Image (tube, rainbow, N blue to C red; front, side, top):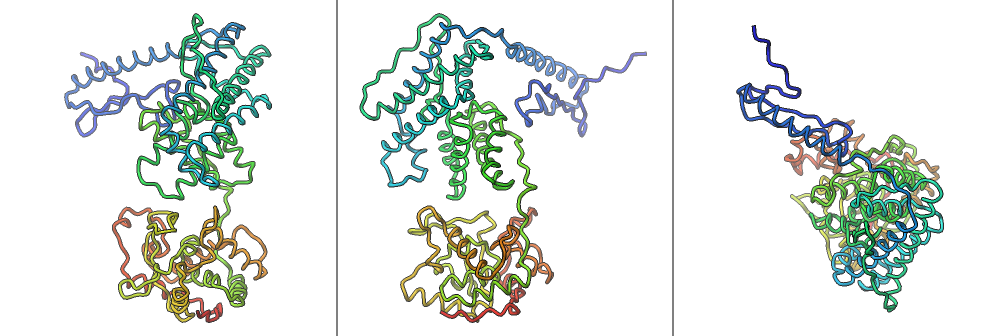
Length: 535
């Protein structure tokens, strides 16, 4: 009697069709997402044919694995001899200066990236390149002075890896050799800066030393002809239209990373850099969500680089940030709200409309702070506020947090009774354009920041002790709690206050004006004794 055929690992039958799954060995995975070497249908219901195909595919994959392991097999380490270090020093200086030459001939890519940053005094493209080069040279000098050899080690490994060289940098001789190479790189960066002052410094020829060939070494900055953070940022912006807030946080994330880890280019990143960056943000006093907001944009840039073929893998894929230490916002307590309203009633400036709008709309502080008078208008027969991100002249930085923030919020009757319509008309008569003129962006201070400071002053006047659990954002929690307590439909609540919903059908559900008006009518804060604010 013939024995049954031997099982083939990963070969299964799905709905009569055979399917093959081949899991990569752990040592050959590029990252957490790189789990499968093959995972697909074999396109046949015939078991003998499926077995032949599966065995052929497995044999081919295992041959590739063997070749990859051979390629990765470490070469014997060699000592950093004086002749080798001299040759590497020549290669480093050549690479920095030839990279500088290329960017002077074709600076368009770098200029496009630098134009997205905020510059004091609006310098010209040439002046921006000069500032960047000077800053990078200064960073290298500081690392040399501090004896920080991590960045130069990465640079040299990129130079020697294509040559099949593995140098033993351990011990005092290796460290002294690295320090020498770091000084060469710092001097070459300073020479690039000197060229901006008119000094005629030639780029040396590639070193013609046996065993050392001209391998372009990417400068540890945007001066490199290779991949840089500036390149990734430019690619990310070109992929689709980005909101100003997203651009700002991404640029800040890059700046904070360079400040924490030095000018390490993307292709030299490892998970150690992510840990060092995260630790530096913690040292600044930032908490979980704030840290995640600065690290996630960089992960997104690296993902895009992988998708475009500029990086083989994302070394930061799957990096986690613990957000359990983030402050949990709570709704204001009744006695606190009464104190805030009492302090608000004593004010006589337009900012006094901030608190009632927060409580009667559930809007975010930034959404209220950036409102223009034109955003208060009749929509479907109801006097409403339109929250949008359409740029207007002089207000190009307008934004919303998420797509769900684009919405219409009916103005509650209580706000009309306080005199909101008359207040808006009075501002129009004075030639004003914004509902809160004092919150117009001032330099780098955005409307939300200015409104936040106003709210902190109000809180101080109300005699409420500082507590990170209670803020202007707590008003949204109050609004949601009242609406939920009145059994308002969750989808309507999300549409009113601009929350993202996890339900797929919510993307295709648009709340009617009648349903929104009914929900707003539930927000009865008459017990807080708001005064009539008038015009």
